[in-house]
Image (cartoon, rainbow, N blue to C red; front, side):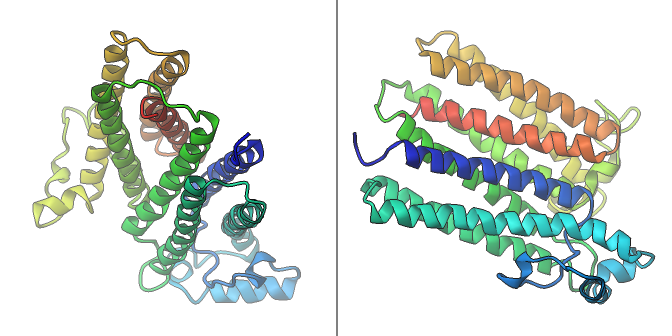
Length: 338
């Protein structure tokens, strides 16, 4: 048996699960508007929530000093504050837990010499990604503590996008150990899957733009943005210069997210169609079929989320399905890359 064993694989897969859980809690935090409830950052002491009424009141008084309370939630009671505090606290605690789950076993495996040099290098990259993700989380929160009661949608997209990339890379490293033997691949088909993977990541980023701008609460019609309009006139009339409409305007960002949804579906259907003419193994076939099923479910969830104006459970389901779809595409790409 080589140095990379089952324990290392389990460690990486547990890390994948925790990142998934982190994204789920992060989605709830965003959808319940809880992300700005904790306005300071304390690495150690911040792990423990307020334990008595005095500590809760102190935390609430701190919250009152920032724009979200002053401009939006000025009628909040202490009980209201407690309800949003919980999700942000849980999100941060999970982040610390993920750090420990990655660092401590990594050092153990390193000391016991159970990691090969390639896996050691990949694990160091994972640690860097995890640390950068934590930094982006606080950098995102800071943007909502200055003059407006909301975080920058750019920083939200960077935070969420890095979480998805960190998960995909962790999963990839685990797959390297699960399937150590190389196989014959079709490079043209692999490049097609790579393109699909890139488009899916872009769509995830635009999903974060939609969330950050609350762009899912307008144009709640499908397939047209409004009655008789495929592209609502506000798509190109909100901002100057024109390109800003598609990265900062609510209507423009939603329009791009709609169009990318069709593109993602079409390219995955095309991947499935092209695969029919290839000689592929069972795992490759499973990955492609799973992608096809998941993209269909994701498209339906996206439409329902829009039509029903982003109820928490639908918005969360849509985000979770994006995670599953990225997992399936990562698996498929790996099976055509090794």
